[in-house]
Image 1 (cartoon, helix red, strand yellow):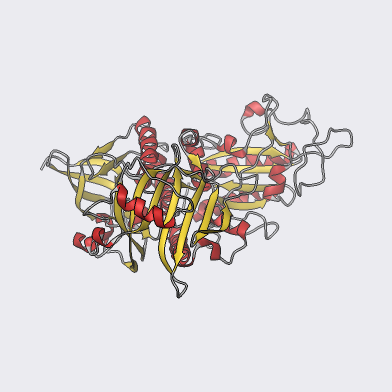
Image 2: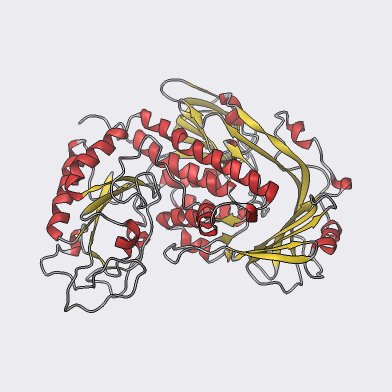
Length: 580
């Protein structure tokens, strides 16, 4: 065996989750190797739904625009029972949410992420399989078999298993993976139709048996193209692949199965029975039989080895939660690994990955199983709340170990919650308003977000934050450093000022031009003004207020501006930052 090579992080599996982990690590300067046993990207439209929260994360990376140019909107779902329309489920979100639901074939998602990661200097090592690994106090030793058939030993400081439902990493760690399988088998087909149903709407068509149970189902998700859909339906007996999942030796019956692939005639037969209007399917790009299981690990990692995505949790595809949940796993873990690898946090920080993400995984598994059994329309939550949850905008770590103490109104965004986007931020040198996402785009560290009506309050808070960060040896006011500061000047009440655009529930004040005494925007800390009052409406500050935005876009702390130093010190202590 050749000499042992080294890297910071070995990522096993180059699907959307592994690629997201690589992207978030590489843009923080972490060296990693990304290996995948497959010789090429699979040309299948497997996971196709992209949630608004995922688009927000990709916006922070600078990837969202490329996705938006290739994806199509998902506007809702049409429900049919026994050939009659029973309802139209609209995928609507509040106007302040910057992105909507989208659909894009998984191979396109992977291609865009692969190009992004390659631009950062990491390419996928195709045809390379993880054979085994062992960890010790200082790192992980992995044995790989490369595309040439040669074996290689690699020494990594950390290992992330993003290698799917049959994960070698999960098995090597001996993690529990409890759950079960649905008895039904389904088939998938990527086809075009000639029906005239509304664009952007999925179709769910059911047939009820005499006892009221569902005995036949057709689900169609729109894809980019002319009347193109990914269709799923019950498999006919002649294509059954029962037991194929157990042939892998792990008893996990989940995902695409081997055996005979459905032909266009198989799909047409189901469409003839269940389509809401007569239609002919054509242009079969790919098809497969698949099984569905629901399982979750008993812990998301051990020591220096972690699992993410399907390696940690699998569940029905209802609501397109799986890939998106895995991408959030990767983003949560990556920024923490980067801090530890740079010596800015102790390894104890990494325990928060399991503490924060496993409850999310458990909730997603439970919800998708309920929706698969009874339909999303049966969910008891209010429709508006359900849509926010499906969009993954309600993911919270309030009960996690990094969440600071609540401050301000109970229904305001609190530590652990998503940091809302907002519009209407203005700068003296810009002739157009910005969104908060525009301000945060490209930043890789924490952001100290300060809000006040008095520029002097902002200046004092920013200086207090800088003193704390420098005291622990960090770099402040740099987009690539530990902390950058963004200040937002409140909309100032003035009887002589022109009225601001209407904003629902906005504070009663009107826009006034920036004070001549306001700090210079070129300093990088100040100059943004809440001209439309959207920041105040969505963040609900209690007077001068500070917010700490984590690298994954969640709030780490919320505090009175006068308490900036204490709040920041407490948060950094929660990260187990080494003493100065």
